[in-house]
Image (cartoon, rainbow, N blue to C red):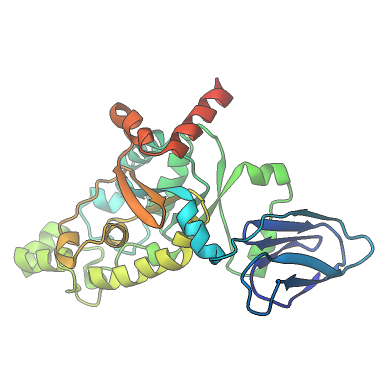
Length: 342
């Protein structure tokens, strides 16, 4: 396996396989295609305290090294992260999963892993039609099957016809066994990241109980308090506040950096985890978020531009032109799709 050393941490180095390495430095990349390679990579700068132009030099490598380097200078005054945040524009799509088998039975579901009903499948497909002209580069879902089904079914309707593929990173064997060895196939794939942090809030001792019977047992006011208050959890369960802590932290750490880099992201998750994320995106108060209702299977579109999230509503056929009018990039993507497919 290749042995790589970095003498300054300003980029990322990814081992793609035993014979390929990809190095990303800001907007610059290097692809190394040897076997049994030892590479020492150094980043030089003009002065001891300079944040100006950075170079990547291959100091030591085997004689068979082949590299491709596409240089793009880093900004001279600001860090790469801040520059990307202000210059890139990306789409963020949020979809609450369709009806599940326990929704149909009026049961508290929470983190119990149940699939979609036929109606839920249809809702997911309809959601896919509504986003079929919006670019999707990455998909994040919860660890629960109803959210994953929604994401997969939605993407069957996308005009670009890329294939969503769940990334398995549980251990080294899972990573090796799920590797894709065709560059062309990789280009036609969309990585799907499943994360428990995006799960529905855990309803504790209410999970599996009938909602109507629970209201009759404990009283409508008490059950309403458990379901709709911000910081009061059901017995041995999570409050919306507790759900928000994990969901928003994951969004900031894992999803927002993808948007900053210019990637278009779709999130398929649940009423409370998405409500938490929208609270962060729209800067809602704890009182405002408890009255926020999200329909199943109806996508919501945000544009991330200049470090700000701008809500654009649901891209539906009657108002689709209005959605694209908000951003030139989406309009250009739609035009390219039309040219490619017609």
